[in-house]
Image (cartoon, rainbow, N blue to C red):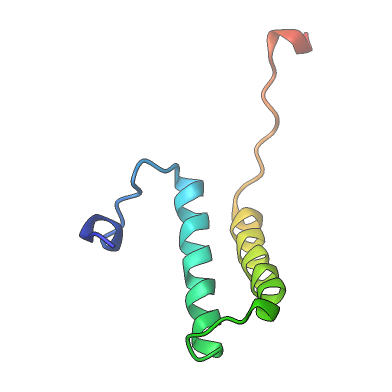
Length: 74
């Protein structure tokens, strides 16, 4: 991992993508800690579920923006 990532350089990601990346990284770190730094194949569905919940938290915390109107909508 290079220093740019550690200090928060989004590596060209949008704000939302960076927030999702960070949430996924935090959850994976927590899952590895809970499982003594080892994931078994049988653990993957639960890990995926927990990661999905973290991503949902990120998306739910964002303000809802109305859909953009295009010329086709008129």
